[in-house]
Each structure stands twice: as C-alpha cells, then as structure tokens.
Image 1 (spheres, rainbow, N blue to C red):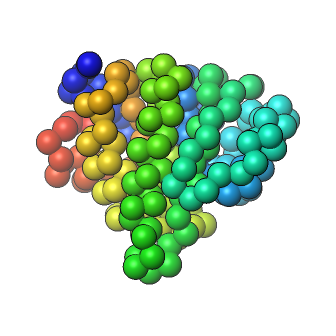
Image 2 (tube, rainbow, N blue to C red; image 1 turned 90 degrees about the vertical axis):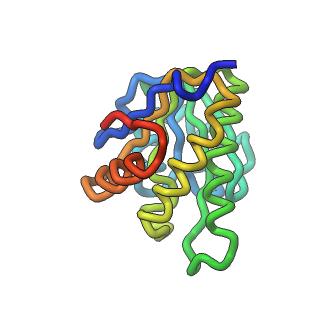
Length: 179
C-alpha cells in the first residue's frame, strides 16, 4: 500500500470544472439534480447526460457519496457528496462533513482514481464556517490517505480567503501542501 507521503496535495484557486483529474467532487444537494454554486457549474459543464445519470441515482443522503461519469468535463468521474447545512455546530455537522470526504475517497479508490479534486464542501450556501470546514477537510483527507494509493489530491478554492485558510491549515499539519 502506498504511503500517504507519496501523495501530492495541492491547493488551487481555480475552476474545478476545468481540472484534468480522474475525479472531481461535487458539493451536491440531496436530489443530485443540480443547483447553485459548484453543483450548478459542474452540471452545466458536464452536459445533459450528467443530469440523466443523476436522476437514476435516486438522490444521496448527507455525508454519503455517489459516482457518475464526467461526460463533457476533463474529469472521468464526478463524485457527488452532500455536505451538511450549518445549524450551529451541535447537530452532527462535523462528523457529517468528515464523512463526505471519507466516503468520497473510498468511492474514488473503488474506481481506481489516482487524482481527485475537492471543492470546499458546505462552505457556500450551506453556511459552514470556512475555518472549521477547512480543518475538517484537511485533517480527514490526511488521516485517510495511508489506506489509499492516490497520486494527487487537490483542494479547490473559490476565493482567496479559502486559499489562505488551506495554506494556514497545512502549516499546522505535518504534511506539506503545495499552493
């Protein structure tokens, strides 16, 4: 089994729909039928076939993950995960968010994905405090990596504030993150 130290971890301020990786993660809603933010952008870039395939999946529960083809995206796959809506932090939000990352990585490994890109799950309209969400994302991914053989994991940021939070978090972890 490949050691997690062999995995390259990047942080990028970019459009996740343009990344030439094996899989991108979609911060989806429970219906998986598209929405706003990254979800809407992924559906728009992937084309109508993505919506057709998502209809057949019968939705997704918070913290779970499902996979589809990438269609018109440069990515071969889209892994759809539903992050928690922030309700103050006392309703299991942290565990549900960590589950999004763990379940997405497990599904990616099942499909022999070597490179994967994550958006900042739940940080948009779901209102998760960015600093807490970044900590959970980085810590969960780093803890899970030893059991998988990923070559690259990218945290994709939609603004400079998130980019800086990821950079700060990597300084606190034992693992360097390329930014």
